[in-house]
Length: 322
Image (cartoon, helix red, strand yellow):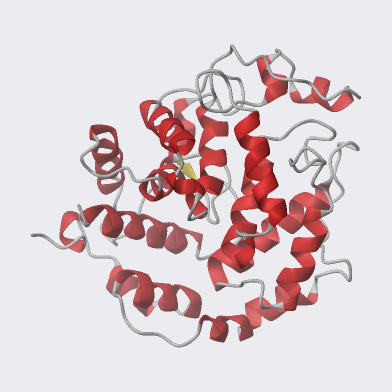
């Protein structure tokens, strides 16, 4: 049987190990080569990490780097989520670190009585950022926290009739500006179709949780997400099918790498023809240097291309088990 490296045009592992990036080196050894490595906490002492932690506020938040131009949007909550994602995904931080505890409690204060996180979409339901925040908190060790479980209850309660998710205000034909101005929480029209962009973000939370990744609801929604690979979304947000190859790391919006990552943990395998097609799409995007010519959409990290490469290699390694 071929190794996962043999399924690619070029083996990128030697190049990743030559990088002067201790975090990428660490995860390459641990995740791609199954090497025994030191405690993840060695990454917490890196100069880049200390620079991030130094900017954390006393309330656990990080300030948005510029002045937000939409007064109803909580930019500090958004920035705190982004920085927490960086610490968890790139440096393996978890709730043992005081900085993570403080950031988690800062974010939890925005959870409503219903279970969703409010503020990034003003007063409206966010079936995008609620599960995105939940995913990172789960990975940081809060999976058994009652507030996370309450979040899952809310997500399950607000599905469309077809079994997946959309932005509730979009199902009523409202755009972001109109939704921000509304003092009432706009309820969904459940008869409208699901959004794969939204569903892909929701399923990242399910995929991160050892219990909920096995749920029938997640499996059904995962099949719906796979059925929409490389198609335009049903709604105006990120509608073009080109968004499938616009990637970021840590993951934010739904794209081919993040979607494949989620459906793997939901129990789907390479016997699925749409998954094989998506992996082949990524293989064809590999260049002579071993990295992947995908469109990076956000982030100032000079090594983002290598982080994306690491994420893609994890996919090939996982799915090759089948």
